[in-house]
Image (cartoon, rainbow, N blue to C red; front, top):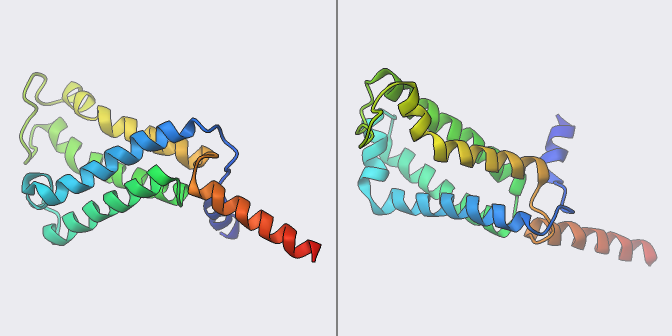
Length: 168
C-alpha cells in the first residue's frame, strides 16, 4: 500500500514540456463542464435527478466543484496523478450510469438528435468524448504532469532544499 501511495504522491516530472498541451485540453474540458453543472440546471441537478442519483442537488454540486477544482489542478499540473485517477473513476461511473440505458433504449435522458438513437452504435457515438477524456487522464496518470507543471516545481524545490541541507 505504501508503494501505491508513494507512486501517486511522487509522479514523474521529467516528461516532455508538451504534456502541457494534453493537460490544457483535459483540464479545460473538465473545468468548463464543472461550470456548466452550476449554470444550467439540465446539465447539473436536472440531469442527476433524471438519472435517479440520490441527493441530486448535493451530488451535482459535488461533481461540479470536483470538475472545476480538478480541471484547474490538471491545467496547472498540481496533484496530476491523483486528479487523473479521480477523473478516470468519475468518467467510468458517468459512462455506466448513462450509456447502458441508452444501449437498452430506456434512457431517462433525451435520445441523440440523429440516428442511431439506441443500441451499440448510439452508445459508440455518444461515448466518444468520455472515451477521449478517460484515455487522456490515463496518459496523465502514467506519465505525470511533465516539466511545465507545479508538480515539477514542487519536486525540484524539495530536491534543491534537501541538497542545501546536506551541504550545511
